[in-house]
Image 1 (cartoon, rainbow, N blue to C red):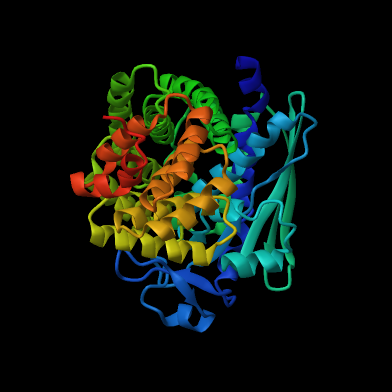
Image 2 (cartoon, rainbow, N blue to C red; image 1 turned 135 degrees about the vertical axis):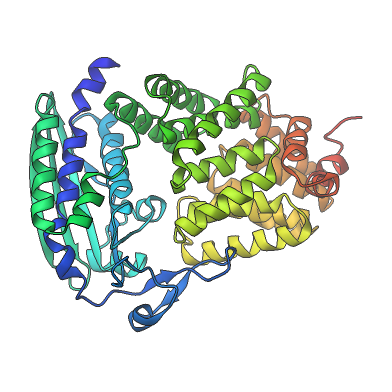
Length: 470
């Protein structure tokens, strides 16, 4: 592990260099008309809707800077990994994520959330097509190649209207000179920007962690969690991020991801000691929020953790805050829909509306099946079981290895009188994860639901198919 960390430590020098690419262009960019954007409604429960460039110029809800200028819409695409070792793919992803985080903190920039830009991976879109899909005027893209202790990062900055390349740069780095290189790049950024306020935002922006090892481990854990499903993938990611929290206990993102992975083990009945996992998750998410209450990713993980700890009100509060801080982040909205889906019937209606909106905005998003499941849960809570079954059929078709999807389908089948379908779906869930029995799933719902009535409506089909026993 230490050898791996050392071979990738200079990633951050490439990141610092990428931040520099915006420097010379910040002032000129303010003069360009933006492509169609998504804007936030006043109500916390409403999703952004498309507006024209002209509307963006005058709308009171448009992103503004402290100097009265409209924000510049930019997307950072997932960087391609050109390394011979396919395992290096997560390094390129981590670099893109860190660049999104860094640029999101700087004034005069509106950066598309990672979940939206990463959803376009491998779609072979032109820069202009990306601009149309994401509603941005500018795109950062590039690639990463590692060979031994050498790392080459090529970055490109393009205008989406016409696809014109505005800036490109190649960075060749070694581990030994990373700190000196970062200082050199930061000084060039400051010189190019020429403004003390913006210079301070870029150079003095808060650092999530001072440990390169913790950062590397957390990025690897996120990759493992994103590409794998099931108890084994969850445990692999959990082991990695636990090492990160031991290296830097104040690293908010690592603590938040650690808490989410612990609770994932509890909810899938794969945790060896569920009570200990819940206790550790509560400590970790409170520590994460103490350090990162203004970080949308931390708030998203917190919302996921709180509802699974039975703190549904807290979950909704942090997720609503996340949607206010990052109104275009569909993942933030998606998990808000989940927490609402387990609530009273008015909240279940809202959950369905949110799911419909985000599915309409991005029907091909990698998490579309997950949002369909959340809507399916909301439909069961509203006793619309036929609609729920249709949705959940799509869910298991898109993600056949997701045990909880099968268990949700089992309940929907039982509620419409298809006891055989319910038993088959429950058997599929248990084949994927032996610990996730219908009774365990019903207990999971009881913890997350607003009250006994909501829990009963969501799990009614399991009882009607005689899957819960006496």
